[in-house]
Image (tube, rainbow, N blue to C red; front, top):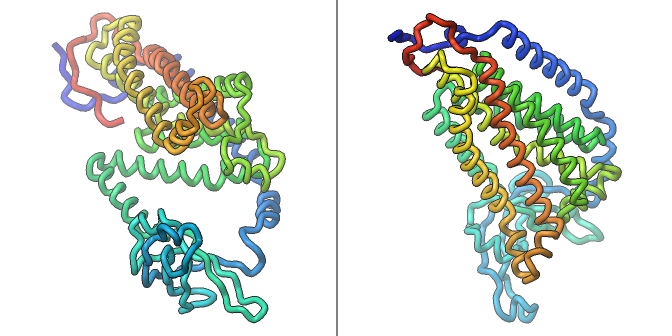
Length: 410
């Protein structure tokens, strides 16, 4: 039997020239359309500045500042909660650290859950400062706990664990993740607020993210290109299903007070389109996972059995894909359930019939998001498998067909 003594590359597998050219040409067209989309949909800074100017964070002169907690009083209880009696319960003493009012001492009231969260002397909090008025000194109100330092440590820990376990592949994945965040922050969100078509913005953003993330993390080769093709088709299917589902179920896209606030500050937005955009973004991670895994399965099966027919290769890879589909669906469902736990608890308190609960905007939106995302990734599995089996041709007659070493780095 023939054995390979090195990691196999794309060139070690029989790949038809016409299939290779067709795949790369199609991806080149999509890449060009993505670049054009970014150029034409790039947000108008003037519109965004106008929205920001018309939506002040607070009254004129009111600013945010940072203070250090010097004392935490126990949460109020009993008569204090009902307004009877006085005292400093439910308050914290703070010293302003910087900016206007530096070194001011203030006592501000906080909610019981803030005290219960473990807030203690030495922690930093953000305060809202109202400047002196009518001879009265500046006043302060509690905004939130400053969590920058613990979040930075957690991020550093995450990066170290990823790099320690996945090494260079993990480092490249982190770079891709950073690019994704920058794309969302500097392109997608401003473009949506500027009134650009949400579905087009989502499609262009998702395409740009996948091109960079996949090639950065898994390398610029034909296997990655195959997974990218399956991912792009999955994105298109998810977008189409989202449009049909949201229209058929009459979802408004405004399920909570946050959506209502955005509609007040930025009038004229297409909130059903924004919901479609959210569904597309929500499915990117698992869709990428499924297509990469499925493509790798086909590549490994072809490397192990070069003479296997395309039909048998497809069936073998789909057996792997079905297992992956089953576990991924649970992942999506539990992720959405965890993110919406407070909403689910509130709906349970209402003690309404299950059918009525399902019809509520907030719950129906999550159900539609879960099901549409799941359908999109399920369909992406056979589509990606078909593309991969077409790309990897059976070995010509007479070529050694014994087992080979697994494929090396992507």
